[in-house]
Length: 298
View 1 (cartoon, rainbow, N blue to C red):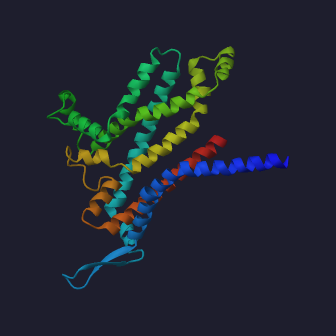
View 2 (cartoon, rainbow, N blue to C red):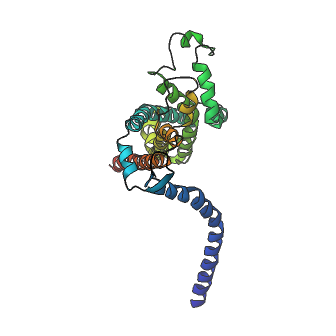
């Protein structure tokens, strides 16, 4: 008995060494490219620039919460957060609703050629965001779009419509990605549940509404959290759309505001904005997660 215990303990030690070897590359990259930049940004956010006289050299000194006070007094930054929150309130439910519908269709026995449609729905995600934004920007432009009947009557790049034009691009790119996550959750549902439902006389719509959707709620929550984080980090699409629309300013989204602030350059203020945005993203994602978990438990 004692010998078996010693053998198991020695195996555990060897396994711990193997785990350390496999985790070392990830740990090094995680520290260098995640923790170090985060800590450096936090450090920069507490610095301010001072000059001796009008033309004196710029010197960075500890400024305490000076940059954070400036962030909370920065109107364009908070307007950009409000803009992307409005974007997320509309775009995220629409995108997840379409992704859920497509996943249910792929999982339905009524649809033929599910492999082809699965690839077709996922294909836009393989297009880089920059390319997708350029492509849709040309489609929206009245002078370049092949759909002149629409673009000549509706200005899709105007100040009132450009936010939703960007939302269409984001939805087109990411709906297939979210669909695959939901579809994978559907494939993990035991077939015995469906057979029992059919024996009870349930049709495909009833099975989808009463069985499939409730069982993929965790996948919907996961994709929802990812989408909220992505919404607050919106950068590529609006940055590209600056070439197509004057309505997309340098403070259109929080990340654009941070980018333009850092380009002034005002690195410390941009770092403080980044920290505030990260905390806002965490707070919003955590709140949504807790609310959904509470409702699921009820």
